[in-house]
Length: 165
Image 1: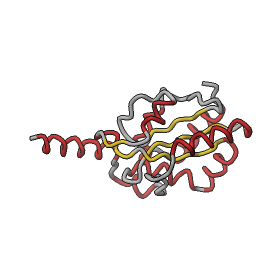
Image 2: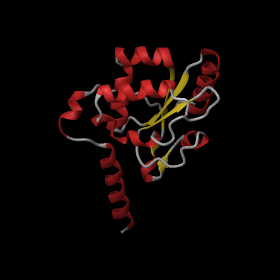
Image 3: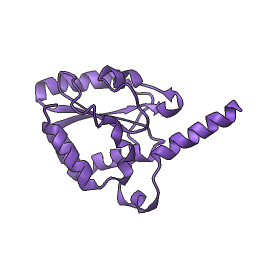
Image 4: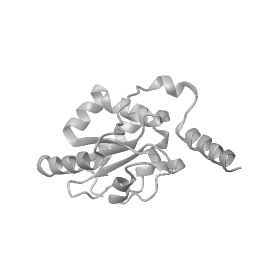
């Protein structure tokens, strides 16, 4: 009974990250999340760089198993997004495992910046150099990244680059 319940929960969690239809062909994908990286050190280094560069930290919390996480990472690697991030952000990808099933990792990083719950992946936090999240209200809403349009994602990242929070 417990195994069946766990399997059902896992299926629901994975379905929350999956999309169907033509959206899969409409975006690039990248595997940018490393389960072995020292995520805390990477975040701390990005915050230190942001303190001198004036950029924001774009903290992308996802996993390579997740279609939406790979889609968001893929967009960030395209020339259009790379130009924006080079100008406005220091990007850090943090592998969070499968927090939906209780198998998360690096969730202390999300909590450190005020994101107490991750109902799905990816989540996206924009941080000031002081480590203040400017988008806590929308950080967990990126679970549908694969079905968002390139322009919608780009416009939101442009707005978050200058938002005072």
